[in-house]
Length: 100
Image (cartoon, rainbow, N blue to C red; front, side):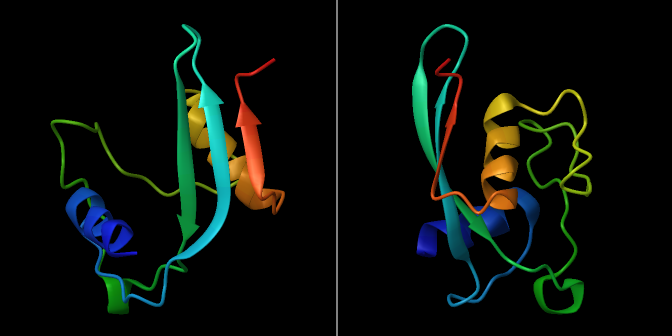
């Protein structure tokens, strides 16, 4: 859990308590050239007063950070990220992506 908390702080500047992140799904993604990755997906209900405002703390890696309704992701959302959101919405333990 310490890695999730550290990455949340490093990548978007939010401070999480150890008991907050809850693992909700695993994504096994294969990209267009056949390289695969597995991602563990965690969720936290964001409270700006407790966690701080989310910000782009790594502009050299990411253009911007924005909030979107889970059913209205931008068309340029990475397939891996979209698969994580679908896994969350469907309450799926495992979500396969790119294995068709």
